[in-house]
Length: 257
Ligand code: PGA
Image 1: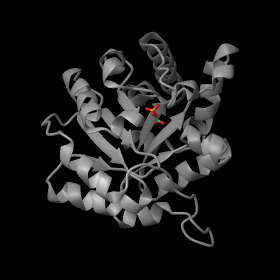
Image 2: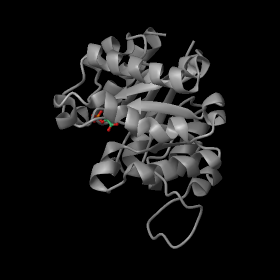
Image 3: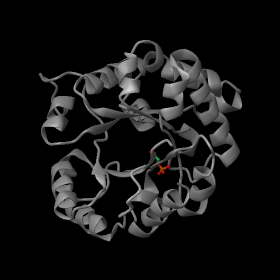
């Protein structure tokens, strides 16, 4: 059975005081080894939140929202994979659509980041998704295949084999808009992605790679999305900032495992 994952991307929200309060309100104590819950705070809170979760004996993990592709150097304001590893962070988001649109990251820079993270032994949550115009033009499958191209063709299969790659399909038109992909749209795309991986790098790896859905997931739509055979959980933005809604979303994945 594939691992089910709920990851809360806090983006540039929550001070350390607010994050600490939220962590104390989260309930995740499942003994099911197949379920993982991650919180993804801003860089400034990573170490403290990690320590807090450890002290609470919590199974919730911590991930980073971004990283720079170089190991070190004159890159004011940036953080490297090596720095994340050094504070015990083992997972990072790469390629979030806000990085693509607001910070001009393109497939090339995202590929460099993914490569740097994987070579430093970080696990990545690799985000990709089509825009509304691309979906309306009917080219969404083509766009997704292109966004996954490097990961599938240029990266060593060992990263897939060692389970270092989590995929997150996040249609740009659904992020922070309140407009979610329907369960049919999500399943159709996830099935396409799994088929693509199967064809290009092997059925066994396609079967075991988690593919998350992201884009306005909330307690009201979480269950129907997570019930889809190829949807292995969610990357949650807005609804992860509130304990009630995030707890309900965690509960939905537990019920569908
Ligand atoms: P949202 O964000 O849940 O607020 O739409 C999802 C994301 O950006 O990962």
